[in-house]
Amino acid sequence: MTCPGCPRYDEERRVCKDGKMNPQRREMANEVVRVYGLRVICPFNDFREELIYARSGPLSRKKD
Image (cartoon, rainbow, N blue to C red; front, top):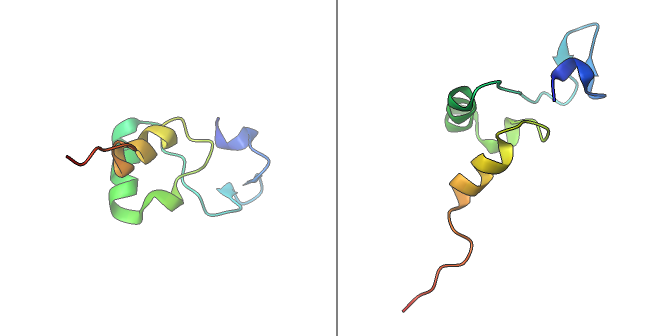
């Protein structure tokens, strides 16, 4: 989703009302997460789910 189409976008100030970032490239998203953390990424960002999985690792790890 692009920011201007989002109901949380302030057209007048041209910023997200929630203070979220919406990087358009995967490399930019990785850098934003590295610097600011995952919470700053918009929930509608195309790469967010991938970033969550990459940061959490496999959900089921067996211990032998």
